[in-house]
Length: 277
Image (cartoon, rainbow, N blue to C red; front, side, top):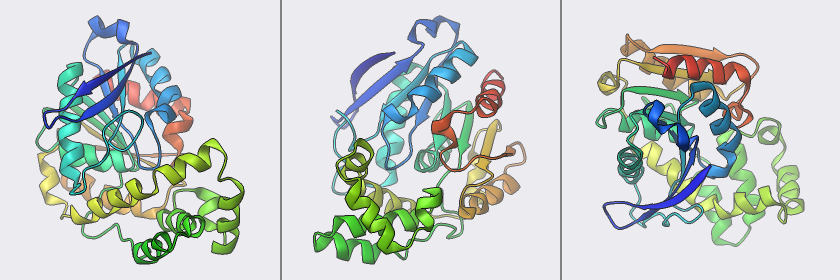
């Protein structure tokens, strides 16, 4: 795996990791757009397995606010991530894109205008006809303003519903768990990305639209939802699939929202077959 910092047209920096860079001669790579509350490092295993299966490079990058990438601007909107994806695609000469969760929302919106040939998404956190709501945000912001980050993080985790068993814990127990894990690598990462993640949720809601504009997506679009993932992912995906006649829709058995990071063989096989064209 290689690492480099690339510049964006607005003067920003993106930290880019390329797995299988030596395979560039075999064809265009696949750009992975990560979720919220994670970094590019959380996709290392996935990138390694997908690159090996495809025999092509897989490029993962730290979106703004992570690693050595630039911080999010104060006037952040989804357009920032769309322009950054464009910069990564151009730098790597890649036309295939895979997005996970928030990264899936970025990819779906971006592929309406960027030169994406094949698009695959897993549990995209895209809001279609108000499928994504976040009535927990005011409470989260009240808690962070008062300095109660442990309880604020608990509100965030429960609101997103993506933490499987954690999301179902009583708020008091989840708050205690956050206190106990504050010094662990996972606990530190969650705290570092709290404000970034909530800003991204707000951007998703602000970009809500009906399903029809997604007719501009590539004909070759693969939508995957984890069988055990929160229901709201499937609500939006079903609406997009209904209007995009050429898309494929798959439910991955036994997998939840973290299915990408676990990189099960059945997911890798599904994606490698799709991206092989």
